[in-house]
Structures are given as C-alpha cells and as structure tokens.
Amino acid sequence: MGCYCDRVTPIATRTRVVVVQHPREYGKAIGTARIAQLCLPSSEVFVGVQFQNQPRLDALLNDPERPAIALYPGSNARDLNREPPPGPVTLVLIDGTWNQARSLMSRNPHLAKLPRYAFEPPRPSEYQIRREPRPDYVSTVEALSFALEALEGKPGHFEALLAPFRKMVAVQVDFASRSTQGRHRTRRRGPAGPVRARLPALLLAADLLCVSGEANAWPTDRTLRVPPHPHELVHWLAIRASDDAHFEALIKPRTPLSKSPSIHARLDNDSLLAGSSVPALLDRWHAFLQPNDVLCCWGHYACELLRREGGHLPPQVIDLRKVAGDFMKSRPGSLEELVAARGLSFTPRGQGRGGERLGMLEAVARWLAEEARMERTQLQMPALSEQTTLEP
Image (tube, rainbow, N blue to C red; front, side, top):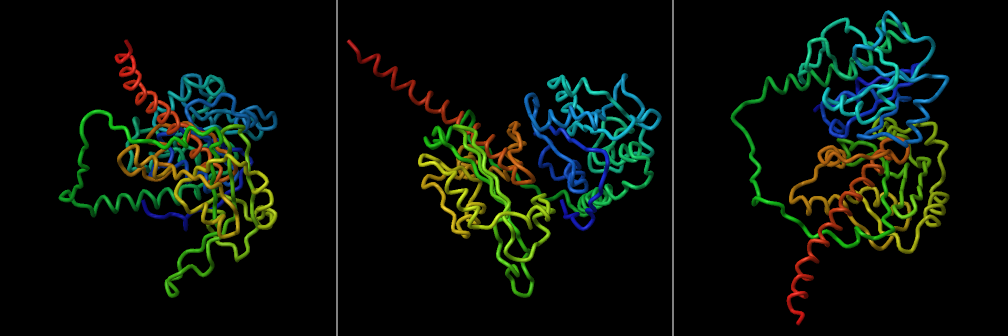
C-alpha cells in the first residue's frame, strides 16, 4: 500500500465523529476510514454488523449536547450545505461498500432513525483506485472532509484530511502503471469438500483469557541494525470469557517515547506518561489471574513484552494465529484480515488499537470454539452408531 504516516496531521474538531464500519471493510489496505481515524484523534470507530446494546455507542448517539446525525443520502436527507444543524453534533458515517452500508442501516433501526444529511460534492472523487457506483459518490474520508467544512464553517480547513489519502492513491496508481501482466501466482486448490483440522480441546475451556499488548517501539537504526531502544510494553489488556472480567493498564515508558504509541497504537502520549509503573502493573495483573485461566494470544509478541517486564502468564497458552492457520489449511493473514474475511462481529474491549485487537481476538476465540464444539459432535456420531449395532 505504501506508508502515508508523514502526511498525517492531527486536526481538532468541535464535531464528534463516529464511524460505523462493516467487518469486511475493516483492515482493507485501500480503505479510507483508517486515514480519518488517524487525522481525527477524538473520532471513534465501531466494527460489526449489529450494534444493539453497545453502551459506548449508545452513549454517543444519545448525547444531548452533541445530537447525532447520519451522513447518508436518501430522499429524506437534508442538504448539509443549505440546512446545516445548529450547534455541535455527533456525525455518524457508515463505512463500507454501498451494499454493506444499506445492510448496516437495515439491521440497525436506531441508526436508520437518525436525522439524515447529504451534500453535493464540490468536485469529483479522487478515489481512482476504487470504483464508485455513481460519479457523485465519494470515499469516506472525502465525505468527512466536505461534511466537516459545512458543519464547522471552515472552507479549506479540512484539506489536511486528504493529504494521506492522496498519497495512498498516488502510490497505488504508480504501482499499477509499472506492474506487468506476465507474473501471476496461482494458489493450488486442495481436495473438494470440507476438510476439518483437529482443534485443541482447550478452546472449550470455560476460562479462556484473551490478551493484547502494545509497545513503545523504535524503528531499527540503519547504522546499528538494531532499534536504539528495546521495545517495551506500554498497554496491556485482557478479557476473560467466563465472567467477562476486563483488565487494562497503561504503563509509563521507561525509555524515550517514540511515535509508535500515538500513531500505531492510537494512544494519548499524556496518558501514557501518567501511566502506572511496571511493579504496579504486575501486582494488578497477578491478582487478576485465576488458576484455571487458558491464555489466548495472536502470535507471541505481546506475551513476550510482558515476560520481559517480569510478568507471569498461565501455563496453558493457545496461539490462535497458529490454530486458525491449521484449521483453515492456509495462512490466516493478520488478525484484522482474518476477522474481515470471516465476517466476524466484534466490540472493542479497550482504548486504541489494543482495545480493537482484543475485541477481534475474542471474536476469533468464539468462532474457533464453536467450530471445535461442532467438530467434536461430528466425531462422536460414528462411535455412537457402532455401539448401537453391537447391542443384542
């Protein structure tokens, strides 16, 4: 895709921005909601298909000080430029293809009932790498830029939202122009019919404990060929399936603060610098652990960060990345890609990227546990049949 971090400029708004995103749109390399989230630190993204009974989203949609409106075209939509709502609002955008957006509206009556606003774009979309169904349709980040200008009465002020978007498009267009048609890779297909891998019985444990962690990570120094400072844990989260117990802690960095916590992990630097000490984190974490916990992680990076700080982990650990790959008989890709590909609905379980990934990990654990349950039911059926035939 090409990195556009150097074009990201944080922008303060009086408008609260809420993005409701279809799971199949999440993690797409050329999606634009991620750009909007990076440029608007106070914005919030909710990923899923049905959004009933989500306390945080419900609170945002029912805030009397910033009434919620939906940016969504239709016959009953008001013109945002001619009839802007008075005062600050909560602007709700539906992110996905138009079919996905219609599906989200139909499945969520409380979103469909919001006052609708639309606008006529001042210029055609610059989204050359993705086809829109109509010439007057634009991408999510373009729509957000135009809408904020109308809502806040600041023409041109939100052009900075489009800088990373334009770089992303330019990189993709340049790559397409230089690519050739002669090289293609074809994935070899396996045998027809469903192929079930053996899933670990631990997935059916009552005390599955999903964890996620974020680091203060410095890039590798080209001269030293190692990072100038070792990666260190700054955000640790967990959720237990049996009792929905939640753990979250921000840890004060022990080395100079890099850009990764704010840009990559989407954490507030001031909150990090006021975070807890490592001993305080470990005291809380060890008190939180239960004897029967079965830890679920995605790879080993996050757990290794905790171990470096002296933290203990349950003796039974499931690497869901490996389990998913074995079950699917293929590489699962990133956690975000797997959740999008399977259409798994999830709820963020904390702040920033760590909270989103914890919610995704919980969704993957639920999916694989259900598959394990079905697998064991099927494996038991032939044995029951044999026992029946042997009885006199």
